[in-house]
Image (cartoon, rainbow, N blue to C red; front, side):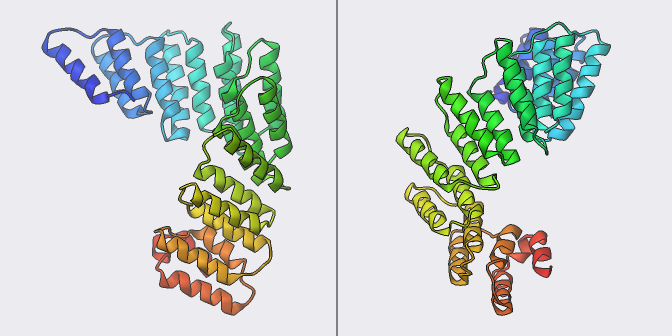
Length: 354
């Protein structure tokens, strides 16, 4: 991680010694803030460049667009990218391939696949050749969009290979993420097979995303999920809270409470602390199994309380679906009121009132 305080210290020492920073110095300093997604600081460095009579070049603007892509306010950052590109055009600064790749990445983080597609078209209009980074970011845009177009994702992969650009593991991970978002387990399975056929070693991210695709499918295949977990263990890959959380969610969707319980136990045996999502999914597994075991639900809620976890609105709605009688619902409601969880969440209060 770049030491931004050190950057400021060095530039101040240059001033004291009468050394005038040039554009390369400013660009390097700006890049330190870019890598952490600090858009505001990157903008301030751009002003410093202009205030010192220097003309920003493509590298300068690329750093600023990179900061937008890595910042937290994705929608606002994507809008700023449009402004930066217009600014470059107005100042006669020609965008290069990195400019376009950074812009596509910014649109991807905002989930704006249409804008990312238009930027890809601009690459070719400028006589440049899209690279793996550009294609991967484009697929990522579809993965983060509200309605992932899986057919388009596969078309992009085919386009890459037809142009001699070999998709890397990150490319496939983004594609599987799109499948997970769409709940398309079959397509995710095809992509996992292609990864192995190309000689890549699937990473924990690959498998976690694949399990997530299984969980979000209309027909979660719990046996396949358990197989993947076994494979990860055999390959000594990290089994994280997210890994188990997605797996428990897959069990919940299929109403497999027994495997959900076993996975929670394995999670704890691995030294991991289940989070609110994991416990909520476990309650959901009991709900969908139609066991109506409120005693177990209260046990889970007690465990959450003892570990300092606060159930949210989803937890309450899920637990409510296990109730068979008005009395059970009233007991559940009173429990949440007594624990004062309502004060922490207006959405939870609204859920209980409803």
